[in-house]
Image 1 (cartoon, rainbow, N blue to C red):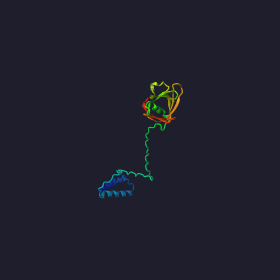
Image 2 (cartoon, rainbow, N blue to C red; image 1 turned 120 degrees about the vertical axis):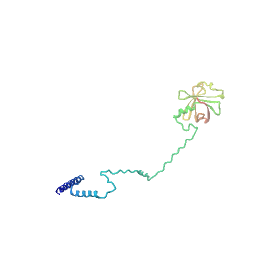
Image 3 (tube, helix red, strand yellow; image 1 turned 60 degrees about the vertical axis):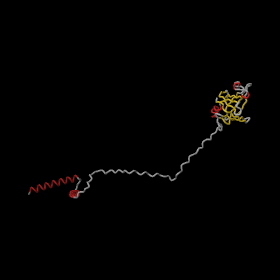
Image 4 (tube, rainbow, N blue to C red; image 1 turned 90 degrees about the vertical axis):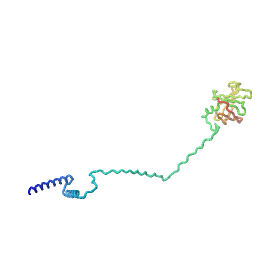
Length: 220
């Protein structure tokens, strides 16, 4: 009987030591904590089991991903709205055959090239005029004219004599200096051009105000 009590107390002491070590491992440090810990352990051992598994300690919180598209912000409308400006209509330029409605010095070379060539009078086809690009040496170019109704041909003209003239452009005017066979004198004429194209030449002689029309026979 004495041995029974000895072994009983030895077993009880071992159980208490094991229980104390377990409680200490769980963070129990005083009597009050031990009482609460023992009640919780007893409840866990003899209480009803739940079908929901306990979550392990230190488990990270689940990450929730929102799959909904973010709402686009509503467009801001200005308090003051203005209508779109109307397109500016530009009328096309009117077509004209008048090359000299506006004439500047910078266009001299172009006009000179356009007037060069052999022209025949529209009203008197026997009257010929030729504007050349042969430079006379004093700011003018050489030209020549003849009237076949007077039995004169181009071959009858003496070089730079009667029937020859010097010419140059001045704005929309043609300045001409007629030559003679007998002297070095020059007779000036001024013609105001009214139309000049690849086919037509119309000018007015300033002293007589007579309009003369020529048709291009050939380019120079």
